[in-house]
Each structure stands twice: as C-alpha cells, then as structure tokens.
Length: 625
Image (cartoon, rainbow, N blue to C red; front, side):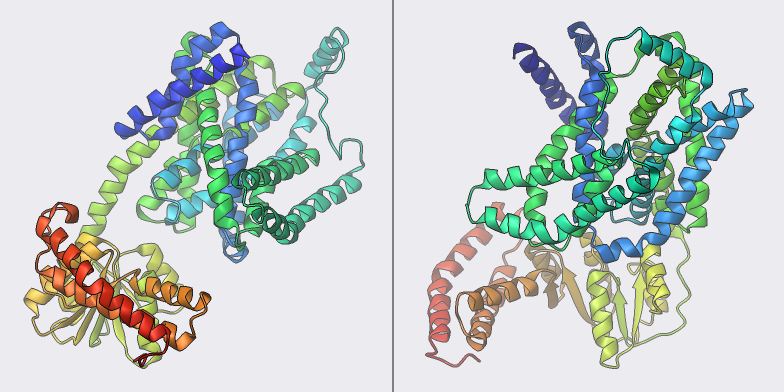
C-alpha cells in the first residue's frame, strides 16, 4: 500500500507543479506532462517501477477521449466526413508507410523489417493531437477536422496492422524466440480472446457481431439503463454506470481483437443524440484528463536516456527525419485535399509525430519475432522523442505560421464584387447564414462578405453566393456598395471587429441603418456608446424562448406564456436604455459604482412591477398584448 501511495503521490505532485508552469509559459499542458515525466524518471528507476505497465493502463485515457469525441459527432456528420476519412486518412497511412519503407530499404534494411518500421511510424499521436486541438480551440477548424479524419482512420488501420505484422516474422528470430520459450517457465502472456482459436470466417462473424452489439447497446439499451439509474438520484451511481459502459465496450473490442478506442468511438457516435450525452461528458471527462496526463508522463519517463546519450546524433537525426518525412506527406495531401492557409500547416505539423499505438505495435513486433530487440529499442525512442517534440511544433505553428498567414490574409486581395445589392451582410457564419436565408426567402437580395476560406468553399459548394474579404476594410465596403446601401447587417463573431466596422459605418454613412450582433450584455453598451441603436444579443432571443418554454412546462397556457415572455423582454429593454448612459467601457461593470447603483435602483423599483404584471398575465387578469 505504501509503495502505491508513494507512486501515486510522485505522479500527482509532478503534474501539479509542471503543468501550470508550462501552461503559464505558453508551452501547453501536454509538454508540461512530458517534462514532469522526464523529471521523475530517475526516481521511478530507483523505485523499480514498470513504466510500460503503467503506460498500458494510462492508454485507457485515449479510449475515453475517443468516446467523448464520438459524443460530439452525430452519425450524419460522420457520414459527411467519409471522403476525407478514407481518402485523406488512407493516403496518409499508405503514403507514409511506403516512404519510410523505401528509405529504410535504401539503407540496406530487409523489406520485412522496413515495412514493419513504416507501419509503426505511419501512426500519429491521437492523445497529444486531439488534446492540443481541444485546448487551443482548433477542433472545428478546417485543419482540425482534417487532422481528426486522419487520426480516426489511423485508429481503424491499427486493426489490419495487428493482423499483418505477425506474418512478417523473421525465421531466425522465430527460432531464437522458440529457444527462449523452451528455457522459460509456463506461459504468462496468454490473453483472453473470443477469436483466437476460430477460423477466419468465424472470427469475422464474431467481430461483426461485437460491433453490432456496441451499436445495439448504445442505441437501445443505454437510455433505459440511465433512466433507471437517474431515478435513484445518486450521482456516483451514474458515474459508475458511465465508466462501466466505456470499460465494457473497450473489453468487448479487446476480446475480438479490435481497437478499444475505435469501439468506444462508435458507441460515442451512437449516443451523440442521446439526452444523456452532456451528463456522460461531464462524468467521463475528469477520468479522461487524469489518465491522459498520466499517459503523457509515462511517455516522458519512458525515454531511454542511456541509449539517447550513447547515440545522440543518430537518434536526434532519425527523429527529425521522421518528422520531415511525415510532414512532407501530410503537406502534399493537404494541397491535394485543398486544405489552405494556416490550416494546411496545422495538419502538417500537428500530425508529424509517431503515436502511442506505435508502442503497442513495437511490443507485438518483438513478441512475434518481426523486429530484433535492438531495432525495437531504437524505434521506441524515436516514437517517444517525436511525441516530445510535438508541443514545440504546435508552438511554431501558433507563433510563426498562424501569425504569418493572418497577416498575409489581411493583405490578400479581396474578391471582386460583381453584384451590388441594397443590403450588405458582413459574416455568413451560423448567425449571418440564417439572416441571409430569411431575407432570400422573402425576396431580398444581399451582398454577403465573409473572411473564412473554408466557410466560403462550403457555401459555394451549396450554390450560395458570397465574397471573400475583410468587411472592416473601407475599400471593400465601398466596392460592396455601402454608399448606396439601405442596410448593413454585422454578424461577424469578433467583438473588436464588430465595434470597428459599426463605428466606421455610422461615422462615414450617417443615414445607413446598421443592425449589429452583440456577443454579450456589456457589448450592447459598447455598441450603444458607438451610436448603434439596432443591437441584437446573440443569445438573448433564444434565452427568452427557453424561459417561455419553462413557463409552459410549469402549466402556463401558451398565449399567456408568450405574454409573460414579452413582459420580461419589454422590461429588460427599458432597463438596458436606463443603464446605457452610465456604462463606462474603460472599466469592468462591477467596478463602475454609478452603474451598480443604477442597476440596484432599477431592480428595487421595477422588480415588483414586473412580478405584478407577470401574475396578471398568468392569471388572465389582463390582456397578453
């Protein structure tokens, strides 16, 4: 017990110290965990800790992570990704394998060993890449989606790799392994399997049945199970059920020789539309975070520093060579699949490392007499070092490449605007898109300007007309016909850009009607101070509708619920105008004494009035108009 507590305390204190420091320095949490693992590796060596065993346990964090990723993907969206999943992912695995195999054979390595090395190094780190994408908010970017497609295909590709690698066994290594087993004790490495002794066709049927069972469990059995557990009111039981489901699916996948991460991903996709999705996310996420952190620390602690110091130049050269080869393949595929700008480099640098599944394949190659121990040791070191360098590649992307492309994009010539209409929409994302569709349905034409290549490509694919350009630039607004326009609708999602555009438009064209999107209540006051009087809070109307639905759920008739919502809306708008003249954009709202006092006074004066009016409407004592 004492040994376990000491080991747990060592990992926890290392992570608690290193990760905040690394994050504060802008290095990211992943690099912090890796550094923590390197720092404690001497102590773990003194304690005789089996790092590989801990690493296998911590890999369950990857399983949980893919389950959570699956929860964010509806089946329809996954189907829409099929082109990139098979094309981009398949070509990356195939292209990288062929490139590395060819290079290895050029250095005189036999084709079986060269192919094995190519397969192992073709995989990237799902754990590091997805964790970094989520931390930096890059998951929804074009590069993030392309990277996710590649990583998902790689996880699927592990399955045929596990079947292929034992077929590449070297006769001399097989003989040596059999001699070693003859002198060894009884078999300690046996693993439970449902397909080990079955013929190929039967194993295939069992595997398909297991995948079908996962879909069945996720689609039909989880809802009644969680509904039953929810009635107990015991949160810890819900957490236990969530873990039970994830572990059970991972176990089933392992028993039929499939990737546990793939199985839990499928389950997550099936549950993406479940009403318990958010509860599952909140219950699983803490375990996912802890296990991934432990995994990254074991990668850092598992680096063979003796081998690294003895062959430093060779190991560093091979690691950098691997990153260069994978980056070249990824860049070529990014060009082929039209991933542009900084997203192209995000895909290129983000996935240029080897991955955690490489350790699994290396263990298999040694056990299957495919690779000699000395090559396997060097391969493991290359995998670990490439993973260690990945956070640095992300830093290069963020601080150099992304900055360069943002500057270049700002200077890039905008599209020539061929059609000018009396309405201009700046930004056609999730807000501007709905506005554009509503106006178009009513017969109004608008000139739409957006600053996202990926967004414009998607719009043009569906036949929508939009122009690339920065709507805050006066020359582009002039080209869009702002001088003759009746209405400017600002729906871009950057607060500072919204303010700059509204300020310019109102100052330069006083007669122009401007409708501006506000990202928060404070932003409303900023736009009001600038001079805009038609301001729409992006979440306000949906919040009012939720409140109205809450009234109806509590038994209020629909018409009266609508009236109560309107009463609140009218009072809220009045209070906004009352407060606007004391709002000061130079300080936080809670630091503005005059603002705080005005809000308190309004609440004391108007709250009883609003409550009385709500009661009158609810009880039918006055008209709901």
